[in-house]
Length: 60
Figure 1: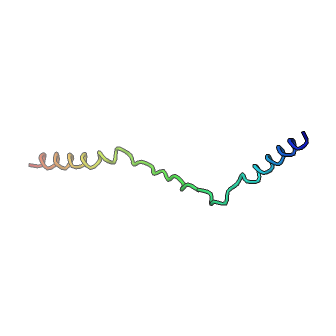
Figure 2 (figure 1 turned 135 degrees about the vertical axis):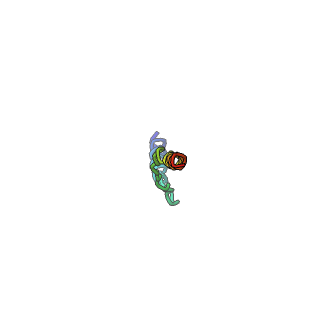
Figure 3 (figure 1 turned 90 degrees about the vertical axis):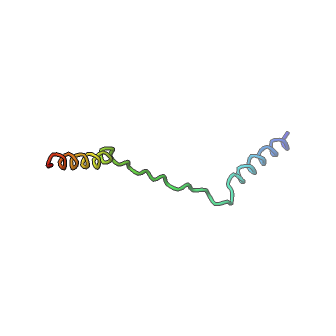
């Protein structure tokens, strides 16, 4: 019985001794989040073009 307990204790001690590894840890790159531009910037150019066309038609 003593040998069984001793064998179990050695097994537990040996398994915890090999818990780590010699390989380098894998470190993931940080996530970079870009802020989206406002959707009103996409409509600004067509509105300016419409104003310019309307001004050109009105001046003739």
